[in-house]
Image (cartoon, rainbow, N blue to C red):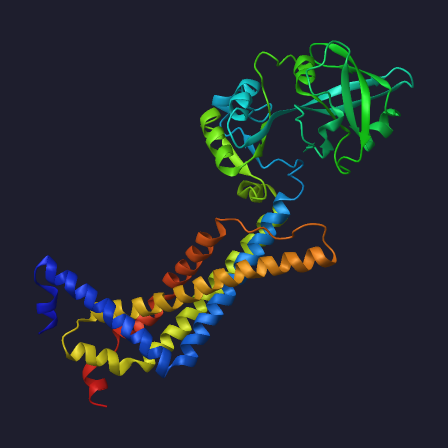
Length: 408
């Protein structure tokens, strides 16, 4: 049957022909694993190492970008994803969640949810009349639960469990804030907000964050009253403690347009806000694309040179040039994909080993993050690299002279 005959025919015949071409490509790959095992396995291994390096370096970059953002021990948090929906002064402050107290109660009513706390942050002037100290605190409003918890790196146990009355507010200060104000537990402070002034007692002084402005933790209703936001119920985020499924269902019902971020899962968006992390991941991407493309092009070209007689025989029995190119492309993509899948596995293991070694020696926490998006990202990079490399082996295959090769 001639090439013209193969190109003509019904849709069923064309479908059968494509399946036949794929079968030929699979057979060639199996043959190469026996007759040219060293070269094929070397290709798979080098592609795998390149992809593994991409996964590991990108995981480190994500950890670098997301470092210091988790200042709580909640299992998940809800953050505003659309300023037009969730109430914010566009261009002045970041988007915030609205009706946070009411919606938090709806989430907390679900089985499997242990506690829910809206968190509101606002700079508030604090005066210490006894010593004359005065400074601006980053006041963080939260709702304490029955179990110990951490918000803004400060424990919530020092807060009153119920909304305080007038002049009954208690503060949990970071050591930096206490040192700047010159206060200790039991001292009285005057908090001056946008709407009201209120007295508060220093209930506890804890370590808190070291590299932040002076921070203090207070009951959410106190801060909302000081800032005049109790009616709108604004919050920067809603923290949730509980089981994963219950958290997801509750968050989807209460804030369908907001973003739910699970504890331990780095925010990919943070990567674009950190110059060093973005440059690191971009460099890893460029290296992976370059190395994979050059390697696949070189080894695929060598494979075409070794398989010229096979390609010539396919041409002699009626396979047109286009069909032979499909066989070459399929075998090249199959080999690179096998290397990419192996590389993803090696990258995952590499992140786990790196974190284990780092935490056992010099690092207090994990130095690399395994994000679910890393898997499709690495596979996509491998596929793109293969597509970039394909023109070279296809050009070599297209120049194969069937008569000359069969006659050799």
